[in-house]
Image (cartoon, rainbow, N blue to C red; front, side, top):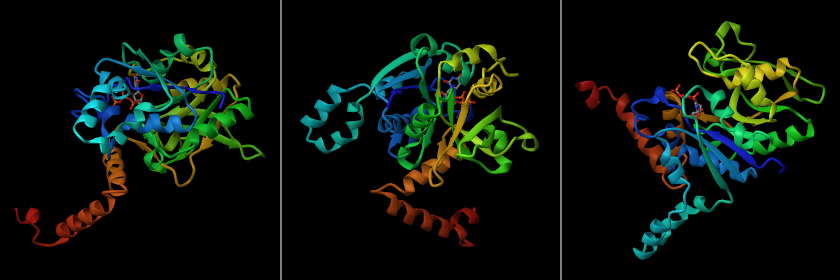
Amino acid sequence: MSINIAIVPVAGLGTSVLPLTKSQPKEMLAVGRRPVVQYVVEELASNGIQRILFITSQGKSSIEAHFDIDEQLIQYLRETGRESNLVELNYERQNIEYFYTRQRRQLGLGHAVLCAQPLVGKEPAVVALGDSIIGRRASSDIVSRMVDTYEAEKADAVIALEPVAATDVDQYGIVDVSETNQGLLRIQGAVEKPAIDQAPGNLSIAARYVFSPAIYEALQQVDTDRQGNLQLTDAIDYLVRQGANVIGVKLDHDVKRYDIGNFESYFKTFLEFTLSDPEYGQGMQDFVRQFLQQQDQPNSSEQQE
Ligand code: UTP
């Protein structure tokens, strides 16, 4: 794959899930057995990415530590006969080089991406949000499909898309698309969190992007929103208006985007990953069934209180 670099923004404040994020990064929250950002990195590695540039910020150093090779821990596990746990550290040995730069003020996702420009601004790059897993256990091939499309169509940008309920469009970046004769989805416009009655459709931007360096120029041209944030969606819209070739690629119908940036979606993601855990899933399902049955009984302890 010709594009082998991904920018992973992890610098946001995560205020929607306070107090969880007061002193730990949102991207390090546990989902089943792993922190969210590990799923993101594993997905990128399995899609041919070999260099990752994290856009980090104050309070995010545990992300860097998570991807270090911890020789002391490895030695400790060996010396104490816990070799079987070593397999859990295999991700440290993935064929990935890590780079880090800081977003010194949290001025939005678009601003975070712009922080990558001095380092990788001359080459096309994948952007993958550090708080969103694609596919159960990060099994999706969407990034390679997007890179293939980027090359085959000589695109300026390729955006991952997922249909959402018409009543939820106000929580996402939403695109307007037209389908070409060859079945390609050409993006005609993009709007961040539109009012439900003003959304151009129900296709949401699903946390994965491929951009040519034109995105940096676009980010410099667009205005910040009312909260002072620079929105990546606005820069995509700007590219489209400049006549750029911006294409959408839908997630496979059995692949979901799991965004852990709000409690409802974090809880659902945690539950789904836990209930489908290869080792503990069956037991967890039995536990939940039993719990729900108890809740349904008229004189369950909660209802007696
Ligand atoms: P969100 O849009 O959910 O923003 O981030 P946030 O600021 O973390 O969340 P709230 O609104 O305060 O709850 C999507 C991804 O973009 C990164 C986040 O770390 C997350 O991985 N991001 C967001 C940045 O890197 N910098 C920013 O200024 C904003």
